[in-house]
Length: 135
Ligand code: ZN
Ligand code: MN
Image 1 (cartoon, helix red, strand yellow):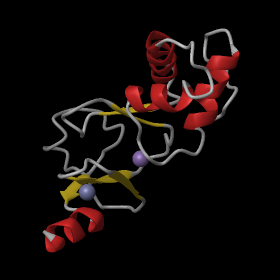
Image 2 (tube, protein in one colour):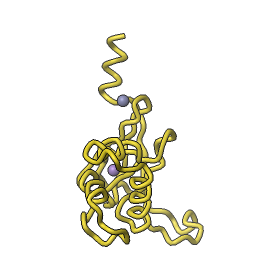
Image 3 (tube, rainbow, N blue to C red):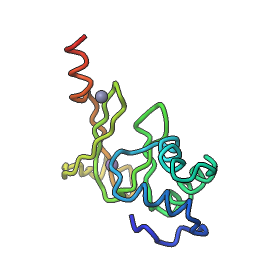
Image 4 (cartoon, helix red, strand yellow):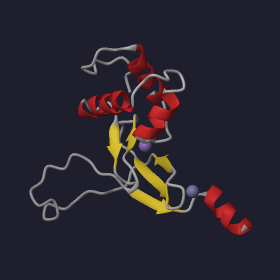
């Protein structure tokens, strides 16, 4: 994510803090998590500021909205094509970089112009597995 790319909003210190938090973040935070982290520095900041900033970034394609966590929307500042692994227990999301041959035959394309694809792998992460063994 280009941190100071025109986001169509005035770059207030709060918004810069949101952009700073997202820059290089691979945790796929929810809006609540962004709010919690950034409000440590800006206790007076409202959740609406975080939410609206994320929405503005999403509309401009500067962050991706991930819908693979049924509990909440998650945001990804890495807009390069990649895939994801999700833990079914703790909802941790991990990036997967790799090329999978997902070409569609003319028939399967249904006359769509294909713009991309996204694979979701799901399972149990090592942390959750170790909890399972202990208990
Ligand atoms: Zn887990
Ligand atoms: Mn990602």
